[in-house]
Length: 343
Image (cartoon, helix red, strand yellow):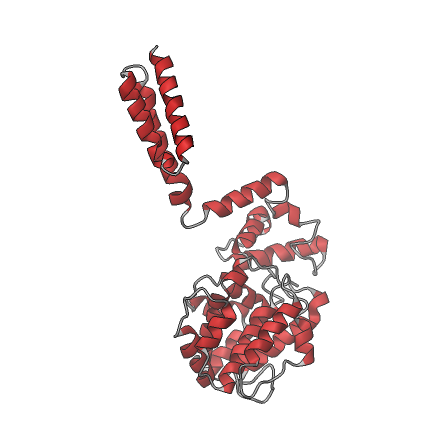
């Protein structure tokens, strides 16, 4: 199975979430209260997603402004959505998670308390997440709310069918538009179907595993999760059903960053995937290189004055950012090189 047995208590809570939020219109914190209802979800959607705060303030400061006029039940729903979000990451401290939740719940004139067993579960976590999971928290929460809202609008029979069929559930989840929330989307699959979907939220990691063990995929598929399920079944024959792809005996086989060179390549790839990488690190260097080629060609056929002018022009854009004394020193060196070449 994909889930880790030592975290059975967390999977039990995940089951409560499925029952309270997806199967019924109930509550994680106050069972019997219709918190996860279509009406309350719509109100939270309108106030949180419908009124984006793009200021540079901290997440909780912006959230309080967005929910300033929210009724108690909407505030409780926000707290429960945030709880589901915080239940997943292993790396975050439980104390930090609880403090944020208590802050949000405390905004209500009728605040509720997190049940003790749910609060204690926050000391653990189910999956390893990247920095984006925290940096893009509003987007992760947007996805959970959008999914829950779309889910509540489905016919009850279809919802029940999807809760019995992990691949139908994934299909429904994949229809929900999202931005910067891939970790939350992947994590939700494991939360709802831990016996089927791996405790891996990084898509790149899933792809690396399937690439490394592609010879164990007997039924070719473009669905990385179906491929992982086949790989797990095959590896379980020797490793046992409860192994993790992060175990020491298997992780180095697929993690290309398991050595120093691999770590360097990994960071290089991250920089390359930045949206402005070409603009900041590549384009201007190509332009300088092209200009310097002209200088090289001019070395053998151009007068000293023209040569100096071309070389300074080639470096001029970068030189504008240099201190004046550095620029004067460079100018002197250029003149010396030009004199020697022509001398």
